[in-house]
Image 1: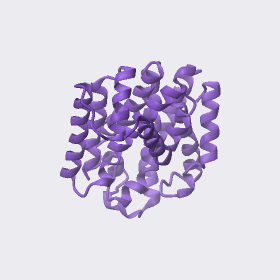
Image 2 (image 1 turned 180 degrees about the vertical axis):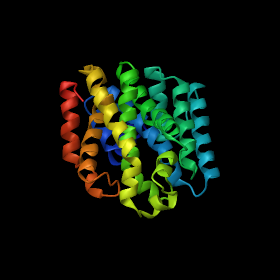
Image 3 (image 1 turned 90 degrees about the horizontal axis):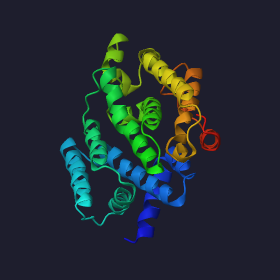
Length: 278
């Protein structure tokens, strides 16, 4: 596949399946934008593993294929795969550590299990290892520091896990912490079936509150985000749009009306890209 075709493939995948990150990356210079699209396309390959396989063992084989692919990239052998070709260029041109790519792969093994995270601590670690690490890598590509970006990505990921509750349930998974469900007297079947929506809202209230508090702290501490790093994190502020809409719907994550519109996501991202304020 030609370099142009590989780059176009990655951008098209990100635009279709990860629009918030895509729109933020548009504000980066061309070469950095291309690298971000490759990174996000790589993440999509990993994050979609569960949906692409019929059983966990096959999912592990798919993740192992990506581990072997990354090993080959750093050994100078690149597989004939659009995303592999583009992520190889990112690793070469932006000094992306192999350990960071391996960590993104390893974190996705958790997706293959039907067992929910046992507690909030486990849940936080998973989000930090996926969405947080991805944003930190993106910030490095943009030439900025990891710490603020990692927190921005983690906040976005926490909100994203709430947004994804109906999607996960449709696939037979519950990704909410079990300690929160138990306190509300809920079983995983209650979430999978969409029953007891008010009780589910009660159960996840602490998670919503933590996400909102972390977003507020991030806004205060980050201040004005450096211009170079904005394409890597500008989308994170849109987590607040979802939290506000979710609040107006009583914390019901099954209410489709909590999802922000695309124009509102674009406007909030544009504001951050221009002003640096989340």
